[in-house]
Image (cartoon, rainbow, N blue to C red; front, side, top):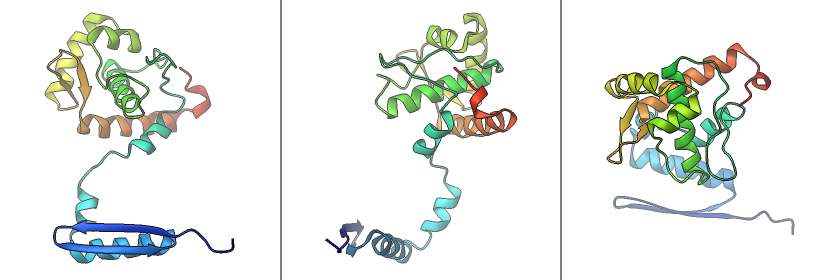
Length: 172
């Protein structure tokens, strides 16, 4: 009863293999040490390669984006420029799909207009600019999804937005 549960991990990286066992802290430290020995540039790669942390992004979206239990996004009640609103809606769709709460990570022009509360013509004018900038892309089904660059830019926009006003006032 006094003994803590042990974590057991097997790591294979190319020909290098390691079996680690111990408490969580010991195993984590040993795994990091193993990986940095096998792949010395791992730390550098982690610092220069942007990988969206969707768990953290989900937390940042609380109070900004809402998803219904029926699997749709609720219209945004934020006064944002069209490009920011589109990116936020696409990010919400991406995260909602990642959480398995939305059936797809893409949105149509009509869905973007409904969610952002912008006119369809405004959406159709702005989306090509977002695509040209690499922030969104059109799928083969004719819908739109956010790119990794779009996620990064939208994260920055969310941080600026939440710094301007308290989280409580960002209701959807």
